Image (cartoon, rainbow, N blue to C red):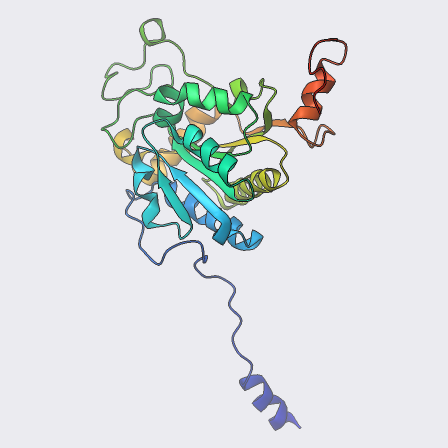
Length: 284
């Protein structure tokens, strides 16, 4: 009997507990060592696998470090002009409303040249998802000051640190967009630890689900690093991020209309101005 049990156990196929997601191409990442883009790409792909929507997903990629993301995602990918990913995503989603459409953008792409497209897509409540990588610097083009660069942070174009008198203050994208009625979900996450990676994945998956449920516009901001342009090791860059960026860009949920008890952004917006006779008159 014992021999039969041993033979039976020997025939059991090994169980796969970890592997490359189907939604990622079998290609090595070519980002700089220590860059968080690879982590975020993987958790996006894991979400697509788990939701089984890779075949109906369209990614819109930016001008920036992630301009090469089409080499890595196995779903359909469209390259947008600098900053125009929300506009392109809007067009794709309106033509193909049953598909999942997400824009993947950095802080220079989204918060500088693309700020108008970002704000107007959000206020219209476009049913798209934006993954926003905030590393407080222009990465691909050499490390210039970005809209999210911290006060006194040194960059190639602010060698003595960002002077807020001359350059203004950093833009807190999540806090700003959370005030708009078309926004369904805004969360700020990071990926410096396994715990934070799991939280980031949960937020992205929720955003994708809200889009499939037609709740409204979603944006997940990922506070990230740029070891190359910060001039640090990957370990030191994460430490610098925790010490400096997270106090300025606190993690958390800034808007979640479903958690607030609403079915979608329209219902939430109407409830806010229920005592205004003309607002949303005749709307459904």
